[in-house]
Image 1 (cartoon, rainbow, N blue to C red):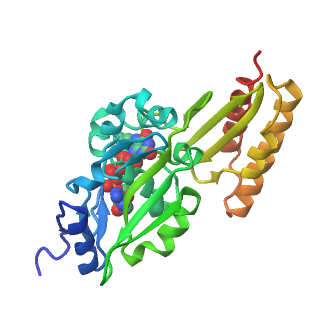
Image 2 (image 1 turned 30 degrees about the vertical axis):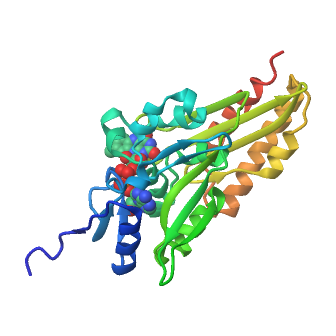
Image 3 (image 1 turned 60 degrees about the horizontal axis):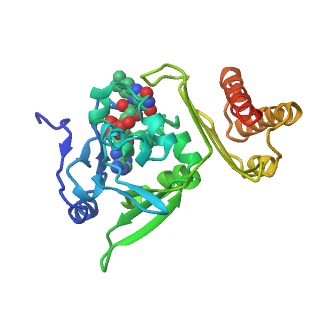
Length: 285
Ligand SMILES: Cc1cc2nc3c(=O)[nH]c(=O)nc-3n(C[C@H](O)[C@H](O)[C@H](O)COP(=O)(O)OP(=O)(O)OC[C@H]3O[C@@H](n4cnc5c(N)ncnc54)[C@H](O)[C@@H]3O)c2cc1C
């Protein structure tokens, strides 16, 4: 029969319409700007017309971002009204034309297709982002909140049960130091792409909080490692920096082994160099 391989594209304008559509159509996939692939899924619904999925709010304690916001819309909010890490990271993705189409949800969920985290994952990991999902049931809608470290597992095991990402919540916190670096090809995404994010806060001349995230083929964030740095007196001395970088390298090796990924020497060197650079910013009087 002619035309059977054409994708079926559905439409929804409200979250309730999307929930109902998801319930009715098996195998329906949500798509954002469609910039990550050349081929649409067989059955899909674009998120961009669903108004609730495009909203942004800034509260005293947190930000919420709709997953259908384009990267350009996030960029236009401006650095002073956004977590600095997210603002710095968004600007490094493609060019402005790409960012006009590409969405936040698409950037995060692309990794569910190939296991390789995209540019925004490390900043969101360092920022402790939480993901809110919604789905319909016979009686009423259900919701579920998933912390970023559990997102991959949730997507693999639960999303087939018609959960829809409704918002991304990020705590609104002030940081003394926020460093983002994109690794691999600039302005595009490739095999060696990865991101590094570092946050630090200072109280009474000690390092009161530190968060370190790396995401590419390997995803790295360790509460144990961060806790080992918390409370160090500032400015950091050379020994403290050297010892932390050495332990950071070991942590990278352990995580590579644990995730069954062959140790990538280039990524490891990039990670330890950026860790050293970030800690050295705290070694200055
Ligand atoms: C020239 C060029 C440069 C690029 N540069 C970069 C770069 O620097 N860094 C980078 O990270 N990427 C880059 N990309 C890849 C891609 O464009 C981005 O990752 C983009 O953010 C993907 O978003 P999208 O909305 O287009 O995703 P889509 O293509 O629409 O979707 C990608 C995947 O996510 C799923 N998805 C989308 N939205 C949702 C949702 N709301 N809920 C659940 N699942 C969803 C889709 O089903 C699909 O599986 C580049 C691409 C091009 C063509």
